[in-house]
Length: 221
Image 1: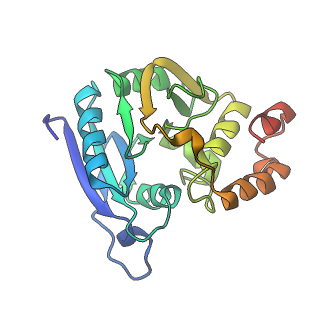
Image 2: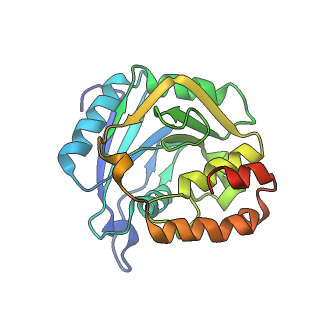
């Protein structure tokens, strides 16, 4: 990765999630971009493109899913070792538009009520943050600082987070902050069955009474 304003670190997921493991040295930065991965070549390509096109300094943290913990568990575990004002969650097959991070940071920072920014992923049009940028201070009031509700492994953690943000007027969107998932077979794959069931269970409680708007509860049911 090139550019003096960008730093990349590579972590083994097992060092974060396995009992008795030695975790990596903690990171302090303004913006952390977290990328779980299973294919290093894809992750390297994604990080390189994101860094070149960011328009803003950031620290990129690539987390290998070497113990099959699932990307959402890795993101939660990694966040505990990062001190930052904001965090971006993406994936190994992400591809950015130019100035994607600069635009996102400006949009999120323009309104202190906003805590989660949904990138333009070409799919959800700002209604769901499949890839997102989160204000860390806002997260404290959601799950006590965790990125996603624990229990989700692959899917629906971002859905729940987005619905919670929508309920409280905390979801931001800039259509020019482009970060898309380049996976031609994405739409033909099924979602994780256990994650879907967990979402349905939590939806019945309003996600622990965080969401009361029936239309929002039904939106992704």
